[in-house]
Amino acid sequence: MHFNYLKFEKRDKIGILTLNRPEALNALNEDVFKELACFLDDKETIQSIRVLVITGEGKAFIAGADIKAMQEYSTQTAYDFSEIGKKVFDQIANLDVPVIAAINGFALGGGLELALSCDIRVASEKARLGMPEVNLGLIPGFNGTQRLPRLVGAGNAMYLMMLGEGITAGEAYQLGVVQKLAPPETVLEVSLELAGKIASKSPNALRLIKEMVRNGLELSSKDAGKMESKEFGRLFKEDQKEREEGVTAFLEKRKPNW
Image (cartoon, rainbow, N blue to C red; front, side):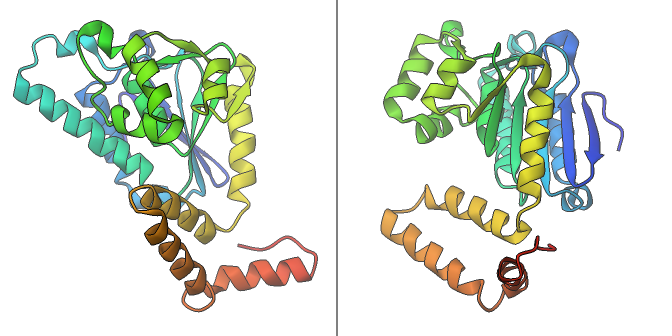
């Protein structure tokens, strides 16, 4: 596939997707969303990798949505833009493989919302993150008002969105927005090292962990627990191949062959 705003490469079983619009700090517009949707719809590519790492070209991860392009939006076009972005970010969140955001620089507004749709976030120690939409008389439009409080709690989410100021990577780490920090020049390498460790695990178990966490957040604790027990039991019959290999490898004191 040919993309104008994306670059993709594979290193063994790890895919690296780079947003490549550095002249606009990788700002998100309709064309970028269309290319992301096209990439994420490519089942053959997704099935060929164990982990996907998403990063940005240049000094920004994603500086936000393309504000200049939004100047002439009507109520309907603004709604449509929000829906397109949410659909794409839901695609990222619902991929069968784990997704790591390698935040190499600014992750603001829609950029942070994209990072929140990933499973794990690694950030440069010099990165700045935030949701500044309130300063424009706007609100986050790509599910940020829903994903952020589920990650850091309502109070912290309100603080970040209502104040509209960026925070340091260290502050984001303390809040739990970011799971790992790295020197600026090694963000991608640290993310790939983490991806490599995850890629060595059972693909089926990783898929189920992701599915249980994502789906469980929408259920009561009781119903989520039942869902977990059902899937745990299913691993001993319907999806037993990887479970058998994992247990056998453990008992034989060797690495499992997934």
